[in-house]
Image (cartoon, rainbow, N blue to C red):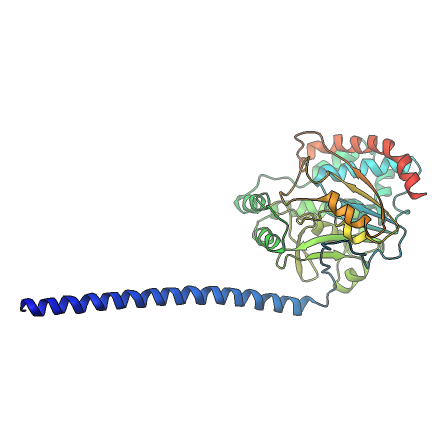
Length: 368
């Protein structure tokens, strides 16, 4: 090959290489654009399919982002909201309502509507189904009850999939639907079978024969759809429509990612109702005349089961702006408490009982 021919060959090769490289970049860029467009398209399509298929089950109620009268509470006088907080808070509630009953306050009869989330869903369901008062009569409340309760409280050394769900939940910095869906996906992928039997027994202990029906017409439980991130609310009407038992509604509301569940309600897998930025779902009682709201913390200090910001004070202000008079009781927890440790149950039971003696007169005045 002559020197001139060699130069022409190299020149042609260089141009071809540039052309090929340019084409490759175009192909890669096109592929990336297609992937992005495809993903966006499938997200939108999936949302449309889900909405179409589940629009008639009546379970999804969007969380109000501004003061809004709740259709469930409109026209009601007394309503009650019970927030979440693990086994510790279930025990605290039991002691609290035990003490209120002794003080002449039958909290199974006074409220016209009770909204329960997580621990609050269990205790509210137990109250309104009548099972709580049966437990008071049949067990030594400060002796045998905590022993039985601690034996069936779910607690096991977490496996890797549970650790992933827990750590993702505890890494959340907002309560958006997108964040809820990510946590929900991790919850669905967690192997929680070691705790399943404990959850079933706990539901049975606290709600009795409510494992087959929804006997409490005034009880509403909350949860988060793992797939769609929607807030779900179950009352007697929607429970009957979707064949949901009260015990399952309470279990779903308490299905903490990486610990228990998710629980199937109707055709939706559901996780803990506290996995959102309105953790006690106080917006559901907005518009009632009076609302007694009991939460474990103020939302910014104290023990937590998720790092999603919980602006409870603002949630309550929004309820008050609808004309509802609110009495807010914050239970509080000792420093460093593990909300899921069965060893804390006996102490929590007594702490709740002692607190009832402080709050009883104020609650009586509020309901009067």
